[in-house]
Length: 500
Image (cartoon, rainbow, N blue to C red; front, side, top):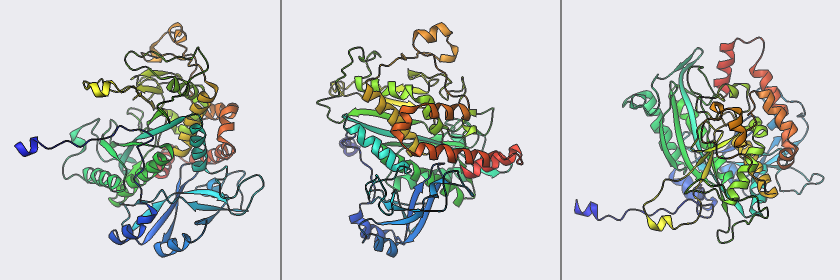
């Protein structure tokens, strides 16, 4: 016992954009990794505008041949990101090709597919195009759009970390819908020893860890057959890549065991839905010289012992100002709005933020008070924002591009934070009480309202670029396919859970 008592506990550096990096496979280690893990195939992976994950599987020998090129990649039809299930959306045709150039910093082991690794990439012009520099991402590439916005924020001394909660339901059948169990939130009965679902969840957890993604915890959620995995913070692009890999791990492991994992927003009106709560923190790149606001009216918001910093304040102001338009990306399906109601802890229906308020679409998460004087003396903010109006049918690249892009607009314009801390559910307040704290706008209540808000938000459209038109087009096509008049409601639900 004395030896155990004398063991020095490991020391962990606090999360920061400067120290928190993705644990992917370095290209220099490919040969060693391939030997030890018997790698024979590479999954060149992308996520299109309707959050469908696409892959081309390339034998390792052929992948190594690609690496000899100055722009290693594969050609794809320009309509690839506009092809929805079995139909090309308006504006996407059969003519033209892009080069999908692999990102050599994004390789991960696919624990769910032994012998495979995955790699992300960038959509680029195959040959020079007027007005664009060859070798840069094309406007229709969500990954390039997110990367551009994050890079722009650096010029304003702002960097970000992002973590995700991934909720999903394990189904035995999709028609009719049948969950693996009926047990609820944090219940041990949802993870009994020897049960199929326990085996699946534990294999998912090991797979996430083995791929180099930080798994912080997992547990059962409140709906039948519902579970959640929580992954640690990373810079935005790396966080989006990690979420794609996490979702692929979940769906493939479930499939291996004869189950269907779905991220569908809400399957039962009498139970909670599945979300993709996104945690974002904003930090000065140079902590010694944080951004100084020129607008004297924009001061820190007092939240007792954890004030919002000036940088957090303008970022939050931008997020809230454009949140209605961002919902077109974060809640991209008609089915998404069955989850966004008042009174069910999903973020409510008012544009608001609140300290530890789960009935606000943006929750300010503050750290627990510390007894350690060395930590108390640290003046850097440890706050972050949880964005609740997001579900797993959304593309993480589009979600983060819209939210961080909105925050960047707030930083650039030094927007005043109109909404004050909402200390109670906004839906339970009187109109006068809401007006007193600046909460006057409703969230979109439908797919149509969210899309109309995006079409009307010129500032957000400008920062996101040309992909907005492509996104709106493919979203319309997807909606037509998911809501065919010839299909029954049960058939529509089946299609939803099998596609998402």
